[in-house]
Length: 234
Image (cartoon, rainbow, N blue to C red; front, side, top):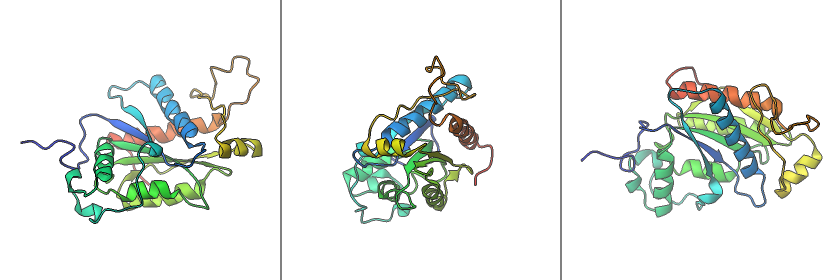
């Protein structure tokens, strides 16, 4: 009997699904808004750059997949099937991650690093990550660059194909930071390749991260290149 994706952990995928992972589980939080902003930006890029092999982009919110601190008795690198895990929560997480061909990690910065939530979620698995393309988008008061660098190092350790340049979304001011910390509406709007906000008819409102949107698009282009077996990783 042929093995299915659930039976064998493999980098071969019939469908091309890209997961946008919201790396924060804090409540309240800005992470879901920012992750959705990144997701919508990537979908906007897809609309303006049609492909003969389009990928489906799906949001993965860690808050929807709560995992206790790593509690598997086995070593992930030695497990080659989701059925090899002891706990149901690990098997479910394994099946989910194994169904994706590439990932976009959207992470805040906590004390110069990435949140424990994403490190824990990563550490549960190994073969489900290995060999797959990944890009990182960080955010925070100064853009979260140290969290991005730390996370990229972890992804390299998993032998993922990491897009060389990450994207940093810096909060534009203290008022924005306070809103983000409290989970208030940040008013994020997606822009096109030229940085234009089609919903801002009169042009009087400054669109947050309009310039960074181009960086997101470029990194995503590199991710798609890695997914197609082209381009180079960091």
